[in-house]
Image (cartoon, rainbow, N blue to C red; front, top):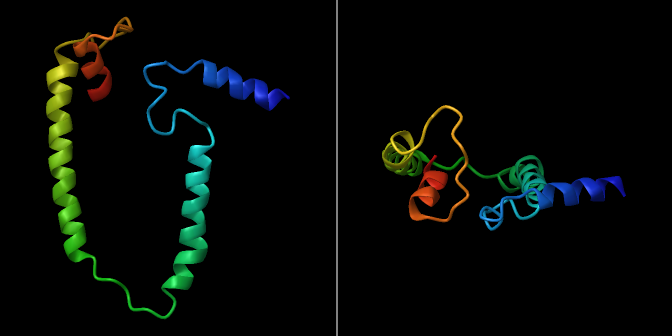
Length: 109
């Protein structure tokens, strides 16, 4: 009974604007993903690769690194554009409005 009370307390404290984001709508999603990851890494993956040669991932890793550089550059640009110069950095009042600037600050910072 107590765990249900805690669960309902935390689910009622969610900001309604953030409730549709991934991993926020339910507290069961993250443990399920962790369990699936551990099952694959510790059980299924080693059995699958037991008699196989290792994969060559050099090209994949190079493409991944380029994508990460581009994505992080874009996020830094958006953070500077909507975060640093549009809000106070020390103890700002939280803006609950749904205007466009408030939404962008919330997303990019």
